Amino acid sequence: MMGLLTTPKIKINGQLVPNTRWGENNIPLGPGTYHVWVATPWLFDMGAAQMTVQVHQAQGLRAYYKPPAVVFLGGALGFEPQKTPGMLFVWLPFALVGALVLLILLLALVASI
Image 1 (cartoon, rainbow, N blue to C red):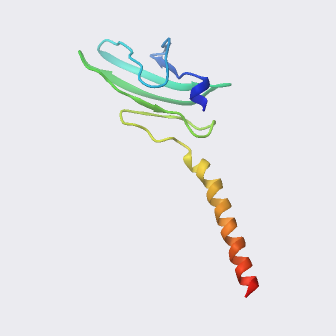
Image 2: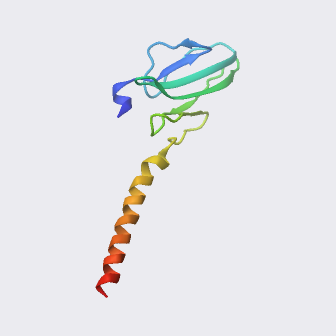
Image 3: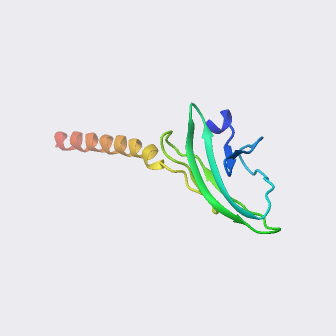
């Protein structure tokens, strides 16, 4: 849902890249070493992730960013598709509620015997 309201904020060597969007962004760079920083703007820059990349002559480079599931966690950035950081915090409440329901059913079954 956050992706519908914002666009990613990308900085290369500290310089903000204009006109970014979710999905593929073509950013022309010459050969060299670059520090890439990506975050999702919200009330603050949430899910910041960074990496250093080496670009060679006539080389394309693909990096993948994934914002976190929970606002105060860092994002993930790498050369392969990334998993969403913090998914444990999303699924854990469902697991706890499910375990509680099973416990109540088990106690009701034992009490009826």
